[in-house]
Amino acid sequence: MSRNVLVLALLSLILASSCITRKQITYLQQGDEDLTDSLISLQKFQEPYRVQINDLLSIRVKALDQEMVNIFNPVTDANATATTEEAAYFDGYKIDRHGEIRIPNLGKIKVIGLTLEEIEHLVEKELLDKSFKKEANIYVTVRLPGIRYTTLGEFGSQGGQVFYRPEVTLTEAIANAGGINLTGDMRNIVILRKYPDGTRIHHVDMTNIDAINSPYYYVQPNDILIADPLPSKTLGLGENAFSTITSLVGILATISILLIRFNP
Image 1 (cartoon, one colour):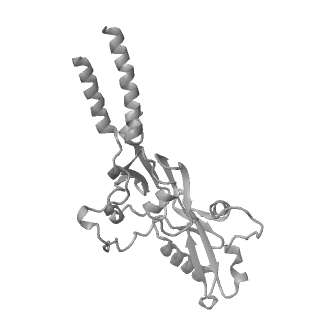
Image 2 (cartoon, helix red, strand yellow; image 1 turned 180 degrees about the vertical axis):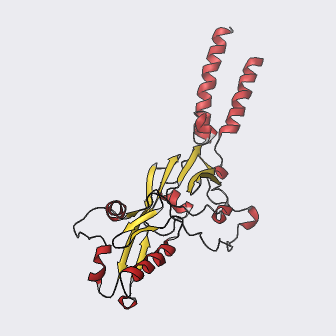
Image 3 (cartoon, helix red, strand yellow; image 1 turned 90 degrees about the vertical axis):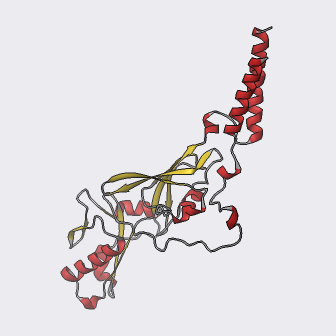
């Protein structure tokens, strides 16, 4: 009998530690004292992205006489079906291992570590110095061909995701990937982010409202988002209390049969 009690106590402990609670699957929770409508103080600005080696840039040059700058702009095929990202692969400017891009008539320009706005000013200055007069009214735009990131682990969909917008929040990126599964650990979203000196690991608790003020709340190109599984999935138990109890009842029944058989 004591052995049965021990087994039952052990199963009860597993049940208590493996059930997924409401707090584990609720996004951006507030404290009990903040349940009324309130203004959330957001971070004022997102740090501008600084381009890195292997980034693709979409550069467009405009002028009063557009024919004068056609050499700098890729030919647009009206019947083309390629996405913005695919088009940039063939027609964009790739930052080489030296941190440079090569532009017709201008040659190589070092852009590593610059923001998109800084690259616009730099290219415009080079064009005015080497190819055009100020009266040409040159206008340069530099864009990334979307913000691409990768999701791994307990997301609704895994793999490469892309947003064609200048800014993407972590909340939007997760929603775009189908959300985090019930078996995913929302309290510890891991972000692998590339920097000029290497890759760093960051952690964000998506169950806490303070996540929106995290310096990593805005997704950057080439981010890798990882949602690890909760212990309940590791143990092979259910996603909620009912399914967990059902699994444990089956286990308990099997153990009871074995105990009766070998301890008549």
